[in-house]
Amino acid sequence: MRTALAESGALGATVRQIARRLGAAVASVDSDLRGLASRGEVVRMGRGLWVLQDFDRLELREDFTEPAVYAERFALEDGIPLGTYRGPITFRSNEGLPFHRWWPYVQGYSAEFVSNLLRSEGLRRGSTVLDPFAGSGTSLIEAQRIGARAIGYELMAPAALAARVKTDIDLAPGDLERAAAVLLRTAQHAPMAALPFLRETRRQFSPEALAQLRRIRSVLPAADARGVTDALRLAFAATLVPVSRLRRSPCLGYDPVDRERPLPFVQYAGVIRTMVEDLRARARSSESWGPPAEVRSGDSRSIDLPAQSVDLAITSPPYVNGLDYVMNYKLDLAWLGYVNSYSELSALRIAELACDNLPRTATRDYLGTNRTPDPWLEEILPRIRENVARKGTYRRNDMHGVVHRYFRDLADVLRGVYRALRPGGRFVLVVGDSLLAGTYVPGDLLTARIGRSLGFRIESVDVARARHSGQRRQFLLRESIVTLTRPNGREPQGKRRWKQTLR
Ligand SMILES: C[S@@+](CC[C@H](N)C(=O)[O-])C[C@H]1O[C@@H](n2cnc3c(N)ncnc32)[C@H](O)[C@@H]1O
Image (cartoon, rainbow, N blue to C red; front, side, top):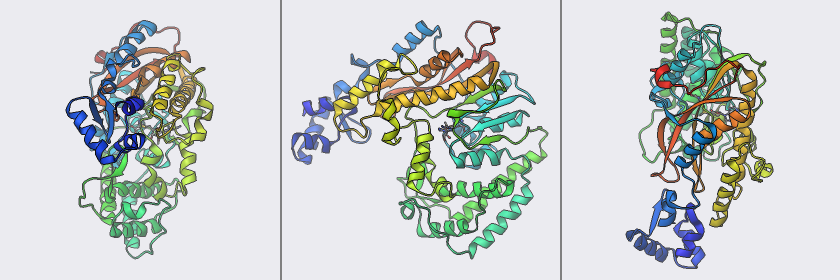
């Protein structure tokens, strides 16, 4: 039993895997493991994975480099000690805010964080702000609110749609109200549209919810980038998850609680009411909003903006193996007709910043562990590879290739932003670190270092909050704000102080 568990190392093994390896009955392995657990010799992690106690306390192992060691190395090699940011950072605080609340999106950062930053950077009417991973538009809305020109790149069409509609300054509340009323009236007697291609559709919704969604879908206008049309489509996207048996937490999955759900006609009408309310309030407000955001539904690994045209870039990229956005937004992608087959979903995944659902063919060129974007990766990638190999059966044996590719993808984005920024302009990223296959990956520090290798000056890395690792709840990860500057040769030296600039 011990040998079988030691082979699985930090990744652990399920009762079935151990039983198979030992040629023993599952029930007897299960009871032996519980016996060992009661003596504290083995530990059960997350979703039923057992590890030897030795692999549970990763920090005590010689083959594990812990976060504090990287922080020390960063201070020594890069001259920047980790700082602290105190202020709201997660999207949760946006859920009740006008415009931000129009689409249930949980992966963003807080609007307050963005508006504080815009203020402290002295941005004003006529400035240009870029968000290369615009999501549902948090940065773009806040930039537009101060009259700036807001530009975003976003790969997921439903998120790009949300960002576009939220910043559509010409969208008239009365027009939207009337068009939605007609749509809902027509939908009551409309034929049922075909189901989207997703195999699980019938499981995801009650029969009644499904029937109503299909009726709305049959009268929903096709995408044509006109204000009201897009707003009607966004309201449909915002209806999907609340009426389904799913939830985003943050990954899309079945809700373990069988709660009562609103039906689509009612939910859709509610979403429209919220939108109309926010539009009316904006029309009454004295703020002078900037032009509609320019949202490019595309891949930010190839930013094609004019050189030195951007005053500030601000973003939160996907974290190293954090989340598969394609999977998370597949309902919206499918029901709105942006994606019509599993092969189209796969194609989108190849353009996404690498995550562990990436098709295997897409890591083929990244299996080497040298010529990486940062020397630290030359230590980290082989460890991931060894840990996966030790386990024998793991979801994928090219995990180190996924991580390698992630940082190459990120380097492409950093390069594009560098070119687009004016000298002296800043690129502020909210980034997390990760624990992958029993290996710690300091995503925030690596982002800063790769930025420096491309010409940026690292100003600061400030920890904004702690997060629990999905692999091991007790292992604390963090979310940091990385501030990079495109030098203009005139910067004052020294660390940037959030507390002075943002409080
Ligand atoms: C953390 S979210 C950004 C959230 C955003 N800051 C907000 O508050 O709404 C990261 C986003 O990057 C997008 N993304 C992933 N790969 C991309 C790529 N290659 N080009 C553009 N966007 C991409 C994802 O679809 C996701 O919406």
